[in-house]
Image (cartoon, rainbow, N blue to C red; front, top):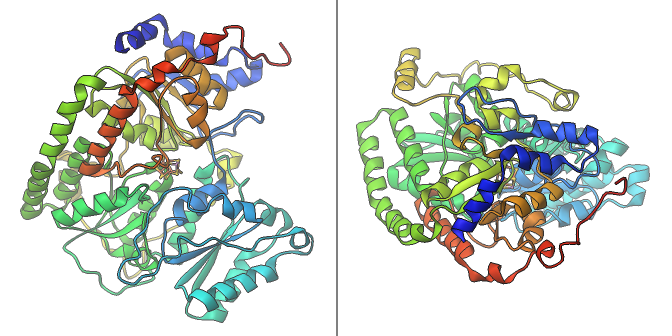
Amino acid sequence: MVTATKKKMVQWDPADVKAELIKKYPPKVARKRAKQIMINEALENETPEITANVRTTPGIITMRGCTYAGCKGVIMGPTRDIVNLVHGPIGCSFYAWLTRRNQTDAGPDGDNFINYCFSTDMQEQDIIFGGEKKLAAAVQEIYDLMHPKSIAIFATCPVGLIGDDIHTVAKNMKDKLGDCNVYAFSCEGYKGVSQSAGHHIANNQVFRHIVGENDTPTEGEFKINLLGEYNIGGDGFEIDRIFKKCGITNIATFSGNSTYDQFATAHQADLNAVMCHRSINYVADMLETKFGIPWIKVNFIGANATAKSLRKIAAYFEDQALIDRVEAVIKEEMPEVETAVADIRSRTEGKTAMLFVGGSRAHHYQELFKEVGMKIISAGYEFAHRDDYEGRQVLPNLKVDADSRNIEEIEVEADATRFKPRKTPVQLVALEDAGVKFKHYDGLAPDMEEGTLIIDDLNQYEAEKLVEIMKPDIFCAGIKEKFSIMKLGVPMKQLHSYDSGGPYAGFQGAINFYHEIDRLTSSKVWTYLKAPWQESPELTAAYVWE
Ligand code: CFM
């Protein structure tokens, strides 16, 4: 099986694969897609340019989601004590109801509204006559029933089209209720080219309306925020377990299993550790500008990456007791990881994987595959920006197009009373010299081998073509891709929802993932499946213009 895959690869030059992927497109579409398909040169800071964060060509079946999904589903969805009220037709709520597997634990206060589905259930008459009164009534009803600390209102496409002023409704209701913070998000699905715009809209409002609202001192010696971790399949629980063991206090996770008060006290942390760069890097920048908290990139996907990230955090605090404790924890956790790798590696070594996920996992999960000796032959993001592929050094040269200009950039200044640099400039330089790089992310490309294919906004047609040509041993993406890939006789793992698995973060998570990949890539069941073109080679589709 392994040799067969390798043979298959040798037959294909990446340039041929690229040509094959775009061969059937009309010339204009082919030209555009060619810029989004990069043959990797694995050069740090000199990667050739990839086109990213641009509109998907209409008619192409993209893997992307909408702006509302990025705002309500991704960023605000995992907050457990903020009621998420969707202003829109019921479908927008129903299909977003508990489908992301961001887990929550009600904790000692018991507040957890995540199981509920709140919607204004807009009807035709609301579209014609306006839905503001209905929205205000829904906020009142939620308040009377639940008495939450906070209510977040989300706009769906029709709200933007008919022009309901959700921000004024939110403000009026906040004033009326007195003890409930109500704010709204103009996150209509069409607002940006993908869910990435929704992340930005959500984070701006969290920063504007919640962060820094609570100055009650928080306990803890080494205080951090974990930014861009959404507790899918319990990942955040595993990371918190490790932090606790190390004596690191996680004030706020943005936003897995988060609470209103976590966000409100986040300005008290001394370091921001950024997990998913795509969805939140600008919040890290804003927290630094306003409160003086530096940020570093971390990755808790992969046992080695987890150890490295813990060491980085400990190094930042420059405290020998913490450094020793982190080393002790790594020493305690790693033997079980190593035993699992030793058991599995003989079966997974040399096998190949493809990863097409969101805006960070297509990079982070490469760590786990490498730990069991697998190769990534192609990967890409759905909606990442160029810095996520090529590294943050490209940021000053990024073109701001009309779609990006549509998304607000908040102007932030140092807080008059609460801005406090956590380190002196001399300390920062010394830490940089010691390898703790601030505001730094190299992106996915330098970590991938030369000649691998990096593809932005892969679509249904190209995914199937790619699998057909390169036959990976496993393909990782989401639910929309799952069954079409499995029908091609290739095991498929969902890296958004984890199917029903997880956690995959941290040390215990890594072990879970190795077993899952071993099970999927070693299973005989896939050899019984015949791809349609194997059974009937005449079965190929053609475009109408051909
Ligand atoms: Fe960040 Fe995410 Fe991702 Fe993302 Fe997402 Fe997700 Fe994702 Mo699905 S925030 S960019 S918008 S790591 S929901 S938890 S798995 S596409 S790679």
